[in-house]
Length: 395
Ligand SMILES: *Cc1c(COP(=O)(O)O)cnc(C)c1O
Image (cartoon, rainbow, N blue to C red; front, side, top):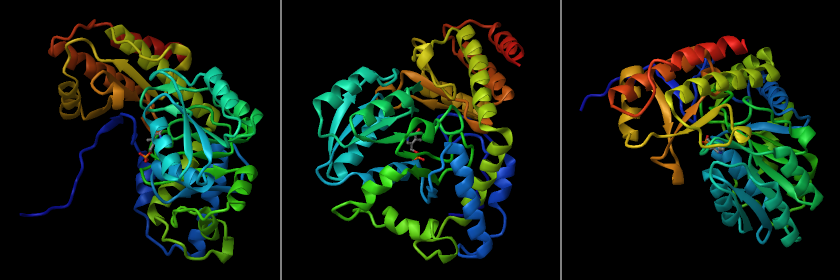
C-alpha cells in the first residue's frame, strides 16, 4: 500500500458543523509553532480569554477554551459542578439534552428529566413544575440551541426560573455562540460551554467555557474530588489563570489556539450584533428559497434557530442519495437527521463564515437541480428568484 499526502477537496459546509472556515483562520493555523509557555504565546492566551469574554458577553474571570471539542466543554461543566448524589434537572428536546443526562449520571448525580417534543423549544412551565416537584434540585441544565432539531429555547427565562428555586444553571451554547444572542452576564448563566466549529467558524477541537462566581464557589466547596483529572478546573486554572506564573498542566493545542484567536478577532471586528443580524437575514433568504421549493420547516417560526434550518425530506425521496449527490456534484455538505429525526429531515446550517449569500444561492440551486432530477415532488423555477428577492429586501 502506498501512502500520499492528504489533500481534501474544497467543500461548502452547510451542515450542523464544522462550518466553513475563513482563509484567514486557516492561514493562522499554519504559523510557526512556539512553546506553550513562551511569553509570546502566554500573551496571546490572555487575548483569547478577553475575546471570549466579549463573545460570551461576560466579565467572568474564569473564561477560557478547554483543549478539546464541544463535548469536553459539556463534560467540564458537569464534572466540576455535579457531585455524587446531586439532583440535576435536565431539559431534553433533542439529542444533546440526552447527553447531558448521561453526563449527570456518570458524575454520580440524579437526573430529573423535563421532556419536550423534538423540534420545539423547552417549555418554561414544565421546568417550573419540575422545580416545584424537586425542591432539593441543585442544578438546571438545558441546551440553548438544539442542533439536532433547529429549535432555540428562551435561555433568559429558564435561567430566571432556576435561580428563583435556588439552582445553578449549566447552558449549552455550542451552536448559538456567535450566531444568536448569548448574554451570559445579563441572563445570569452560571456555567456555559460552546464549541469553535459552529458559528465561530474556527476549526473543531476547542470548547470555550465560562463560570461565574456562584459556580466557582460550588466547585471550591466540593466535598469530593472532581473525578476527571484533565477537566478538574482547580488544576486547569493553574495553567489558564496563572498569568506569568503559568505552570504545566497539559500542552495547549498551540496552532489551534492561533486559529481561535484569529476567528475571534474577526467576530470582534464584525461586531456581535452585526453577526447576529447577518445570521437572521440569511436565514430569511434561505427560508424563502426552501419554502419556494415546497420544503417545510419542522420548528415553529418563533422557536427557529437562524443558523440551523431543519426541513422535512419530501415523501419518497432517498435522503442519503440526495446528500451524496450534493457532495459529489456540488461539493456541498448538508446535514442528515440525528436520533429520532434520522431519515426524516435535512439540517442546513448557515453558521459563521458559511452564512453568506453565495452559499444560500448554491444550496437552493443544487437542491432544486438534484431533487428535480430525481423526480421529487418540488416546485421548480421559482426558488432562486425568491432567494434573490429576500436578499435584496433585507439588504
Ligand atoms: C456540536 C454540539 C455539541 C458537541 O460539540 P463537539 O465539538 O462535536 O464535541 C454539543 N452540543 C451541541 C448543541 C452541539 O451542536
